Image 1 (tube, rainbow, N blue to C red):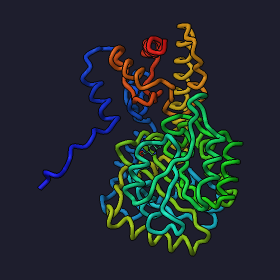
Image 2: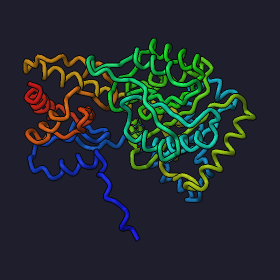
Image 3: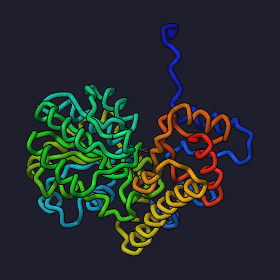
Image 4: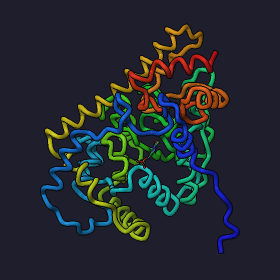
Length: 399
Ligand code: PMP
């Protein structure tokens, strides 16, 4: 039956993990995966998550199905986290929101909703580069994916002029995917002033913003600061959709906790949109898993746990910022002639080193340092114990 099914290529990240596992060198370093590690290089379960989990378990809730849109106490609090407690979209009851299978599931619901209902076309523009799964998710949702300029390889920074130029050149009312913060893979975010200009151009062109916020709190350590573009765009009167993930900021990766929301013009419109989200989700997976959402709900709704969590998010962000500084310092101490300012200018889990594919190959083959060929390294995988050897390896392959 399946003789016509061709062997597909392995997932790029999983391929790296396999090569890493097969390497017997004891000091090998894996900077491929996008998951936070503590300074011992170990996965980290947030203490606030442990406490919330104990509360959920000890309350002995039943295991009945949630509604199609998930656990209401969770989605309500997720909306407040993203849009802010004083947001007009919440006060005026015009936000349609559903729990989702983490950020990827939110993107998939969003892609399907836009494909089915967005009246102005089926093309979505994503930054070049973007998280590789964007193209796959939107393509599978039936959208056409095009790119706008984002990265300037000469400055290893934002190609702001190119981005604005492409946003202006796109047909009016196009869908525009925006990373709210901690852009993956580059770690390069627009400044607040640049966001204001982006908002202006999107408004002028009547484009439709499609926000992906997978790292709220993870970039600056402050969840409000990281949500700046969301709040700005609302203030500027844009319609928008938003995908939220709690994988990184709560370390709930495998629990698959996320939310998808649509900003509507009125409470009445919200009701209609909400009914269609339900019709869309029902045949996809019927309703979402409850455990992770209950844990996140505890953390978001219990004042003292919430405070503790915000401190832990900041702790993760700060450790990453510290590792950026240490890596740069080590490279400079070695006498590297290259400019490494971008390592500390960039933000979030990843650093886009500017290393070429050949250099990344050398890093893996000669130094047992594994990361993707595009030169992206997960700063979350750097520790005080491996940063020196990492810097020496980068120094050697960059000459
Ligand atoms: N968007 C971006 C930009 C991401 O980097 C990620 C995680 N790698 C996601 C969405 C979704 O991840 P998850 O499904 O694990 O929440």
